[in-house]
Length: 128
Image 1 (cartoon, helix red, strand yellow):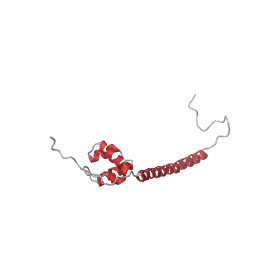
Image 2: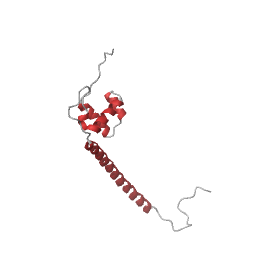
Image 3: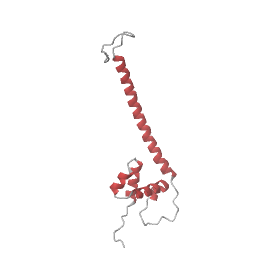
Image 4: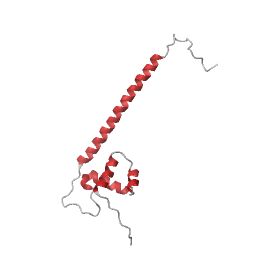
């Protein structure tokens, strides 16, 4: 018979872990910091997606008598936040791309043009 006590996590700890996963943090890292198996995180994440914060009840505590309905809105909210974050990143990358394209055009215009085809450039060829 085992004498080791089972660790019990309250709803706030579980919710914090799920939010870290939603923010894109590594499940392995979160599990290591909480010193739990990744299977616990998977269960918490599945319960959160299905029932929202109400699905993250403490261990050994019976569910309320009313049936918890899956919360589609919570999952949609998480997705919309992720989409907004990705759209922001795309916008930032577009600004950077425009900057570098403009800089490249300016560098190309600043170079001394040759006098025409077949005219030697100011640099010697590496071939002899």
